[in-house]
Length: 294
Image 1 (cartoon, rainbow, N blue to C red):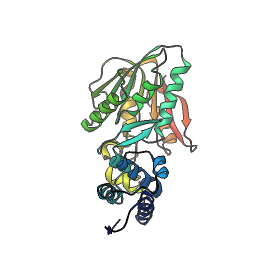
Image 2: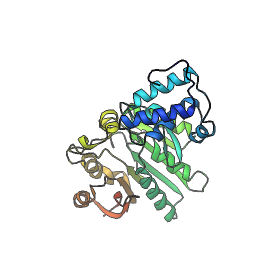
Image 3: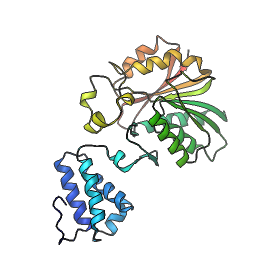
Image 4: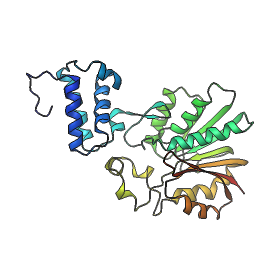
């Protein structure tokens, strides 16, 4: 596709093979998957459908659209930003440039909160999500309970206007009526008490930044990634104030990085919280802290 020959008939198979090889030369992880998703996006079909019409010729307009996307992806610009969407918890979410891209690890956080709610006899919940980003946490939890008798009222906050707009679009997309989205710097504009406080705060340390993939390091917002020198800045800030906003028998759920368990276990002792549970992810790393008040 680099020097498009007007006499050559480019089929889906041709473009897929060429794009996969091109991504390999640019050190793009999962090159074939990236190629499939970009081509499927342009053709408005599923990845499976590509293989069902392998010999279908592409017209010049389709080839040009694909070429523009693959050139941008070759710079390590995130695939999710190119596609404008990402999958999380089995759902599609809109993702704009300027917001943190949903991570599979955060599904462990969602699972942990859902499991806790199911274990209780409580039918009415007020939940605060700090740093909501694209809104994946409150929306995924809300959709899980949508057909059940349990009622959940979410307040989802973020300091980023871009993130708030993205979360609103996703809430509209998934028709969640129980989520209020509000701008707030942590607890700055918050009142009332909650049964659960959830946060997946920025937790990348300054030293870890340079080791991140180019897609993350150069394109995702630093404000959604960096958590101070040791990556613990926002955990401490939340722990300092959370008890004023949490009901006495409430729970505080944190997503943590794979390297932070020991440091946080020590730091939590300085606050009015105790560890109730520590949950591992699919790779056997500690990923979620569930805390209660002492």
